Image (cartoon, rainbow, N blue to C red; front, side):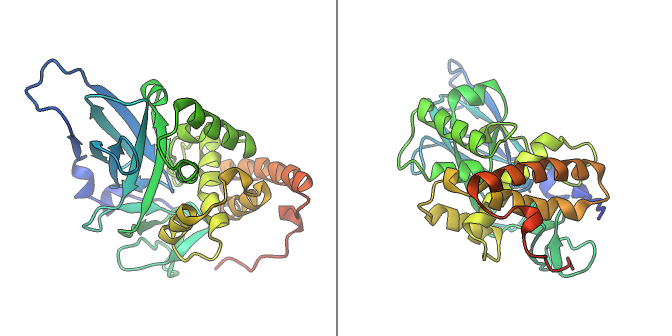
Length: 298
């Protein structure tokens, strides 16, 4: 399956500008030094998502931004606490779009992109994001200053472990545990978003991105939408590190195996299969090769 997606054609009005508003001291405060931070949003690539930077989940709004055509945003902060809370939501005008990085992401509507006209949002196609969409994460000031940070389903699931703002060390420990549990190439807050239809993608980062996306399916296997899956994560008491690695890799394998003609995805299938088999031995579960035959993809 080889899809070429023109984001400029899809979202001409949206991509004309990136909204950026700093909240805090007035423009005349020339003595205030500001910090410029960059981040990305992934479930998969989210275009036109509203990003709020806060002191806590219910705290002071420090800055706002909008993700661009690459799922990236930039904010300027007058003052930065030791940790910040990042919340990503959909624009109220329905302009926020998200690239599917599951094997399929549900039935299409009039605003979605269905390039093969099969009535389903397949891997790599685009869907309109509902207003109930909310993706979150805690980020340390140190991480934000060093490099671009990431908000994704791993950071969203980890955020549920903290009823109040965590210390930087507690957050570092939580992300290190997730990286170790799922054998990620990068820490969850350092996964850089990939356009799954781009031929120049970074396969290591993409594998991490797909692992993060699959976590939602584990939390909510019967969900009919990404929004429902994210809500299930929010309401769950299960820590992300308690999730089965075998379950996660099975879901990722279902997605990447639909891209059999792409050599990068073929290489990733081998890597994921090895990880899946190792996890199944440790967890005493069925590996991907031992699962019942899946129905043919439509």
